[in-house]
Length: 589
Image: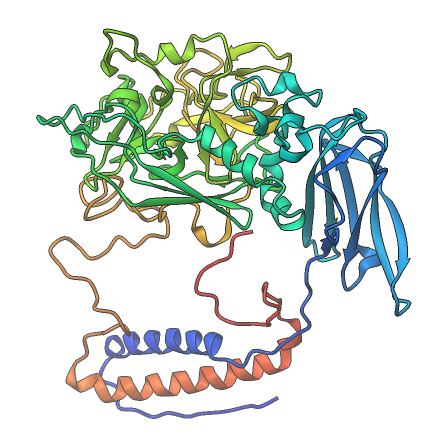
């Protein structure tokens, strides 16, 4: 072990003059030792690979194929755990051992399909290695009944989808795409990669049916807070790539609206990227509590609506529940906040957004009616399942107020949150508590079950207006994410957005910034111009401070390098298989 003893004698003016330099030196030394230390390559542990070698046909005649084989590839293939499901039902796992030309052993997962009836079927194989890295292979296959001739449906695939025995599930207006069950919905990401283009056309058709304003034919709408006829038009487009869908939108609704006190709404340039196949967060059990779940932001965007409008959390401005305040639960005395048609409004930055409801995007006014005739009760008192109103950033859909219970009965979905004793929403989300089983939905405001678009079942959220006790239906959209968010933070807006100078979410006179966000300089002052921190120093302390700074940095380099040299083998690996290192941003699971 290297021991270094340094004795420094300096003529220091005062401790207060030295402390700033010493603190800056320690900070700089820590940063340099972490970011510029020599990184050591270690063996890269890759996740398992599931490869069907393009041997799985999209369509097959009944009886022609009796099994599907998918190869498992991994550095330690014998330790890989494999699970198989057919149409979301677990089945036993069978393996076959093959030998290549070099007599190398190769392991295949065998899925028997000879007993499957004609129709669409979803095959899922999941492989997990010792390190917990998981890979999922998905395929949507269509088994066609042997009719004795070639027929015309095999050429297009469309006829088969509507006459394959699941026709009763394709009459809900979604057409071919909903018969995939979740087929197309769950194979888009992985399926396109592993089974070619089997879902392409139907997948795009599905999204085109669900999304609004993507055909460029939406009607002109008006902002009731302006004196002019605005003739705004919602615009939306989407791209599908690498298992994700990216929505690009101007953020304007497909209905008339009120900008509210943040007038006036203006076109935005917004985009949202979500996974086509959502993945449950394994640490989140929302039926019990929100513990270990990723919480939706209390303020700012938490999801997007199918018309491209941003969906915000319940809080606004100074931190109260904007919906509860608007409905008269408490008096908002900190800022002028009110919600307009469809419980939406805009901030000073011009971004129109919903805090609740949002169902008016699907409302059709009758002759003689205007958008001002819309009532939230018209979306609650219906006799059929509500349509999708949006998607959370984890990829799971958000439906309107009405859904199906476990018996398939149509009913309004109720929240399981209520106000704590003595509270009224003035303090926002902190005023509410989750009561398991009080309503229909869990702590994220969702449930698992079948829907018109997902006849095999999926997790999904609901908009809520009441809780199970008849009280206010906080959180109105979602409170936490059941699924995992995409890495990189590209699923929505910047979590620190909504602040000065344009936002209405936080800032001077409004409320504190979200946790981890820089509040910026005090009003009237300019921020730093960048680079290293500049500290004011006096002439009498400059030499001593600089000397101590260099000594501190030198000591830190020597100590940290010696520690890293002796303990590098203990360093944990990041996703690139590199030990140690400085990460500028945290990685999401």
